[in-house]
Image (cartoon, rainbow, N blue to C red):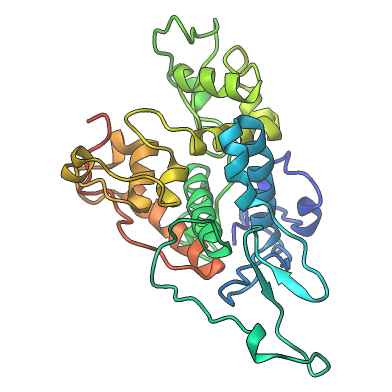
Length: 324
């Protein structure tokens, strides 16, 4: 999966001990694969997700609980459950699927539940399947933002997310500071992309810091040096609508209904709208874009690993940017 996740120097145990990645003479190529984990796409019968997925889910849950009351409610569907001897739980708390019976385990036909189709995207009440679906979207977008992959990388370019904590060359680039009385830039500080979502600009650092209770407007480097703050900023961005944009979470859970203006602009529910929310001004509305293709590649990889369908409208090539 994301073989380079442990490249983040502050990635904490136990996952760093399960994923002992070390550079070789070839550069970024790791010396070992991550060990598998039991927390998996049990709802779809797919392969178990590696520990990096469980870690990201747990971090998303903890960070979401710290952001806002509505975030805490949404976080319930992200909490990983521990497998037990009699059942295997999905990476959420909404649904439990029994483990396959063994020769010594009696079965009852009435206890068997029908397998749901993978054809449709999740709607309504969160389930293990819909939790996996939106988890795939979150991990895909953050993997693209922090990618270290290249075309001929081992296991392909989409196996190399979470390689960098900050925008490459950000320290020597622009300051990403917009004049603002509410969120004034600190002297000598730059607000380039940092963390899993690569949060940028003072008008994002300010409200994110206020929501999570961290002084990242005054000290933006915290987003790259404090792992909790880093993931909290990503969850804040994911969960928070910024008019006229909906939140990424609402789009991926089917809670966003496009307006007439959205429909006319080609912004229909699906993963493509999430890309539009994050970087639509640069990537959407002008036909094929390699950056969008990379985001979709990561998303499909995670969906395949979690055993869920891709849904519709993955691209934003024909979508007008929200602020366009």
